[in-house]
Every structure is written in C-alpha cells, then in structure tokens.
Image: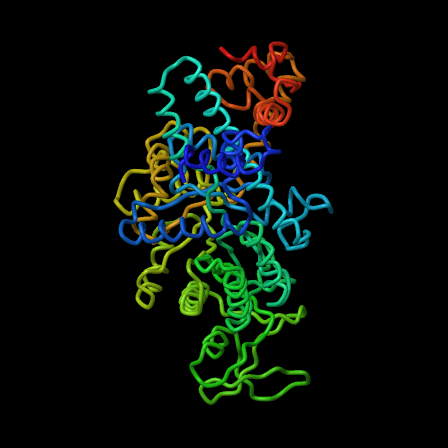
Length: 528
C-alpha cells in the first residue's frame, strides 16, 4: 500500500468515528511507515528471505558474497547501517553479526568474561532486540526527515518535488538487515538450545550460528583447550534450532554449523556406534589409541578392525584425537551437518589462508556441491604478519632474492614501506573477494571490530584531551571530523529521537505542543 493509499484508508476509518476529529490521517500514515515491523518475528521472516535470496545469488555468481561487522550495542549496529546507506546507497549484502565473545566481554552482569559461555544466555536475545530497536529508530529518523522535506515542498507549492518525495517514501529501503547471531555451543542440552533459539528468533534473528564444542567446556575458537562432541550430539542441537524456526513460522530460517575441529584435539566422550562405518565409528576412528595386550584397572576400550584398543584418556577424563587429523575431522563435520539440516558452514581456522580453506571446501563439495561458508575474518589473527609470511613463502618458492628480509621479524615497522609489505597489503585487500571465488565463502564477517575501534579511538582521545591539546583534542579530531564527514551523530539530539518526539507532540497536542527543536536548540549550530 502506498503512502497516499494509507492516508486515504485511514481517513475513511477516522470519518466513521465522529469523536476522532482530532486524529490526522496523514500523521497515522507517517507513524505506520516509521514502524513497519511490528514484532521480532516479522523481522526474522523478512530477513530470512533476504539471506535466502543472497545465498541463491552467490550460488549463481561468487562475486555476490555478503559481509558483516560484529556488534555489542544497538547504537553501534545502527551507526554501521546508517554509514552503509550513506556511503553505498543501499544495505544490500551487508548484515550484522552478534558475537558471543563481545556479549561475554562487554554485556554480562558479572563484568568482563572470557568467551566460555559463562554470561547470561538471556543477554543474547536481549541484544538482538536492542539492535533491531535501534535499526527501526534509524528508519523512523530518516523517514521523519523525508516527511519534513515533503511538508516544505508542499508549502513552497512545488508539486513535482512533493511527488518525488512521496515516491521515495513508497520505495524506502529499511535499515533492518539480517543478523547472524551466535548461540555458542547451545548453553546446555538440546532442550536448552531449543528454548534459547526460540527467544532469539522471537527477538528477530533469522540466522543462528552454533558450534560443535562441549557446552560446559566451551572455549573461544582461537584459544587452546577446545573439546568437541560426537556428531549425534551436535545434530540434536541443529534439529532443536530447526524445530524452533518451524514452530515460530520462520520456515526460511538459516542454521550456520560451526566446526572447531581444526584446533580441537580433545573430545569429552566416545561416540555411540551402531555399526561399522557409521558416523559414530568415523568419529571414533580419529581417537588416539594404543593396542591392548593386557587390560588394566579402569580401562575404557574400543574395538577397531578386530583389535582391542585403549583410547588415550587424560586426567581431566577427556580423550584425545590423533595429531594431524583436524582437517579430516572438519570435512566430516561439515558434510554431516549439511546432510542433516544445516544451511551454511563455519570452519574456525588458526590463520586466514585461502588455500587451506579451499582445500577443505573442495573435499566437502565433492559430496555437497553447493556447500557455502561463513568465515570469521578474526582480529585474533595478526593479518599483517600472516600475509607478509605468505608472500615471503610464495616469493621463496618463486626463487626471488629475499636476503633483505628476515621472516621471523616481518612484523617490524622497518618493513612497512617495502615491496613485500605492499604485496601483502594487496592480498589482504582482496582476501574476501578471492576467498569468495576460490574457497566457497558466502559471508565474510569480522567478529570484534567495534571492540577494537572503541578502544583505539578512546585511547587517542584520552591521550590528547588529558594532554597538551586539551579541548582541541576533542574538537579537532572528533567533532570537526564529524562535521567534515557528515556524520549524523554530530546532531546527537536528533539521533536520540528528539525530532521524532517533537513530531509526536505535534500530532497529539497540535499548536499546544512544547517542542524541543526550536530556535534555542543548540543543535541548530550544526545546520550549516
């Protein structure tokens, strides 16, 4: 329904109610346009359709990969999407990522916590709801400015401009985009996973990412001590999430199955096996075992190829896998997940290396041809060092003279202006594009970018403001840059919803409205 159609329909309703003379049909039409999404489920259904279309587009052309940045606050997510619309004119292909790491570190009532699923699981759906609250307000704010322009065009008698603005309102692109939300290892058993998934979906999440670690032993994907679970355990949680999506009517919901097997050398339990060669038997085949000639007290034993074997068990009661089996286990995890309900894969790696990722994806695609990845472009990687080392190794293989370089010290600032550093930076610049084409990566994300940008910008401000620069440290490097770069937040009252509130006051009280946006509002100093 168009803007003018909504006005006409609403006017018809008002006309049938004699006591509603003080209600303005166009004001209602504006409020409806500013509140397009009524519930989180409306958002989940809408954004799931977006992701499905984007996945199909990527299958047709790997150049159509998607991207996101991690968030820990609604304001951060809002500003990202406002910036994307400002710089690129559309939000297409750009999502938000909700990081469990950042919730643990920044949003827990216990204070800063490591990424070990110790934070309150209710904080996850709460952040999803918060993110979408801010994105919906971004819509309301931007549409409010369009309504003001429409009123000005009408007052000026410019019917052509007014019609153009109405057309823009009818074709308005929302800031609401898909959120890929981290459910960690499920925060408990499959029932706990289902209950949390339902809350996350009700808050608006259309894509949930779950990992194959033991829930009560969960570690950050880039730390040591990771422990995986047998496939049957993981599949029960994948099914639990699918049931939650289906129960709530989000039939297009997306499940991202993450494997931490590349860096996980331990398992908490031996998989149940029904017959030789089944998925449990395959999982157990990677266990580090020794042949038994004599049974000892308390031994746990398995049979393999007619032999009696003792899996190596640690004092922690964990079992270890054979060294060097990580990639094989990753491939098995991915194939099994895709064949049992997952839509996308996440392989947590120890470095950003396209050939390593592509090697695993090629093997997965021999079984599941349209396998696609979500990939963590993690700040846990030293990107500069990794890519300089990759270039060094490639040039060594090509027979180039590298006597001017020390591979062990390539992070040194002394190399920043070299040809090797320039080549490494170029590979970093094109990493996402190249990995999308070669390694099946549909979605690239950075998990913790705003954690680091907040720290960096705060450090720079504190150094200057509390130092010799004083107030100039803020004015020159923050406010003046906001003005020069047209950052909307320079008008922070407007960003907080002050103008939206003024509109409502006028709707409700007419000429009696006491509005904040008058001539004495200091935000008027930024009009120029």
